[in-house]
Image (cartoon, rainbow, N blue to C red):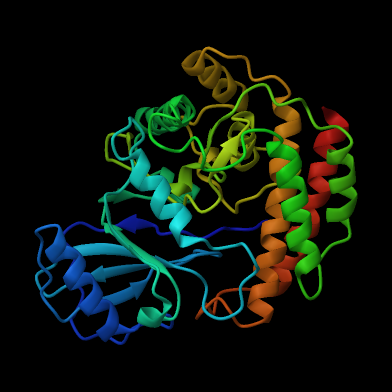
Length: 366
């Protein structure tokens, strides 16, 4: 059983939707129009009403909308799921603060327009950022629209950008107190198991079994760095040349062991013959993509540090994905994720168990 985590396929260039289109659930057109107009005026920009809103396909956690005005100016709006959410999840200020802090660094992020913490405006906190043109390479079909040398370049750029994230001086950019510096993995294991326990009906008992195995074998944290939390190719925007134009989806960001980010990347880096595949038709199956060993070697060369225990961190990332998808299943059961007629709850529930079992198999092999 395979799962496709659907994300925006492409950020279109010079696209201007018909004004006055019906807004998707989770959007108050009049209120956001007023807020965005004031936010743009504050930074010397303009908004030509009416605005149109389009929920970008996918986003199984926080929701992303493309916003366009009458003149074709575009923005991206992020907000939590509508309705039922888990406690401590979907902190919009966390994503906004992170990308704002990274603006002067070598890490490519969209330019922030503003954060709205007043839930009276749109029913929940949200933030808006400038639109970034490029392609989100979410599957093998999209990857194959690039020539093989460009595909290799995007792999290299992805890993080099991960190294740039981990090279950020957290104190210099004001993130030194963003989170606790020690015990990252232990906190993550408690947090995600707690999220599973908080759902109305946990999906797979294998999650608890894998959790125990992980708790009993946590590698010692060697250093503290900025952690993206969900780093993979389809959480970036790629240019036509294969460079990374922006890193997206910082909702899981924190401080901790950088090997956890590398492990997450490897968990999504599916190769032919893999017993557990996190994405359906993944882009990393395309010709010209790096092998996992090449990914690790590129990372070690870029950071100057050995990636010890990387197999354990891949198992941890696989287990954590099972926990995240368990929460997705719970939110869909509660009707909290907006309109998505393509969502198959049984496929997702089966994938939760498959991923948790896969984490156990990775631990056995490490």
